[in-house]
Image 1 (cartoon, rainbow, N blue to C red):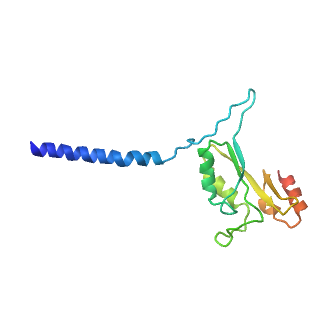
Image 2: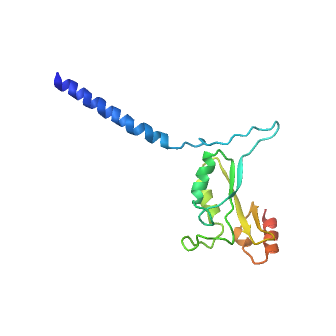
Length: 160
């Protein structure tokens, strides 16, 4: 009898200990949409939630493009544009990459099969004037990497 009770108590302790460990671990995980931003549709229109100005480690951001995709999904966004700076790359010593399209490509890969639109973009970064400007719906961000700022804006307009 003592052995049966002892065995049942051990089993109960193992079960309780497992629950004690699993419940907090489950609460740490974020499910998609748990930070969702909600906006109502206007009658006759579809409201899209978008972020057209984001940066990654390939510019002056602190996360990779796949993390920007995960953040957008958690926020319930419909579209994002990664607009890494064309000219300003403070992480160049650690993450050098001459292709200004790379962050878009990585975000596209991360968003594959997910309900998120990735818009090709870049940030034109110059001293004043004209300062900073985001160009979106681009075909090739590398084509904007020019010395003449007016040529940069002409090319951005031509592309998107």
